[in-house]
Length: 177
Length: 154
Image (cartoon, rainbow over all chains, first blue to last red; front, side):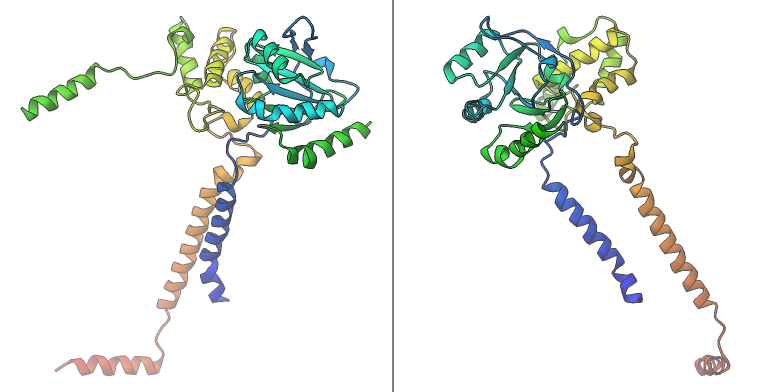
């Protein structure tokens, strides 16, 4: 019994070291979204060109959708773009917000690289992005049929993210009342 | 010569100005409001560069947040309301001074708990040792002691 008491500080140290080791392996740049489970903040954004409708928060209804934050100047958005085009081809509804960008640049970006979006809103000032709590682009929200945010992906969606996390969630959200 | 060189080096230091991330066009005309904006900005963490305040950071998002802080102040918000506006969007993560809430109880009181545990442990140890010291010698020990004491005398 006395032996065990002597070992207590060592045990205490081991537990602390374990907690710190776990903490060191977490990515500090991943800030958890404040919006999970909450409705999208209201926004009503203009279109990037006359051929497309703009995007408002009330457009998220009747079916679960992806809300992809992008910009024409964003390099990792270009990495993600082929996957978005692929999802669009498979009938996944994707809305886009063009963040801190110029309408003409975004229109050219979508003309050159293909347009995976059902609707695109232009957030030139970036205020809607700040209301959504984004720290950069790309970030992608999964929004359910009631306009509530259910998940946020920070950084480009990889095939594994889609297959393991987002696709199962979208399937589940479709069957939800 | 060396001295003069050293003096000149110090003198050039006096000519420099601290570099501010806060650009002149961001600053408010009202010095009182601007002072409050600076104080609030120094408590808000830049969400892009992690451990810089938005007051120190050159990141575009930090610039946007500085402008928002000033807009809210001009709209008549209190300091608390301005901070709440940012926390509502980015979470208490952005506060460099962690608030007292369920998730931070261990952070705030952990050191106190460890200190108390150490004090209690130390007190128990001291009390035990004292009671051990105070134990009277039995008859055999008394005899042995007086024999040893006696041996030492000439």
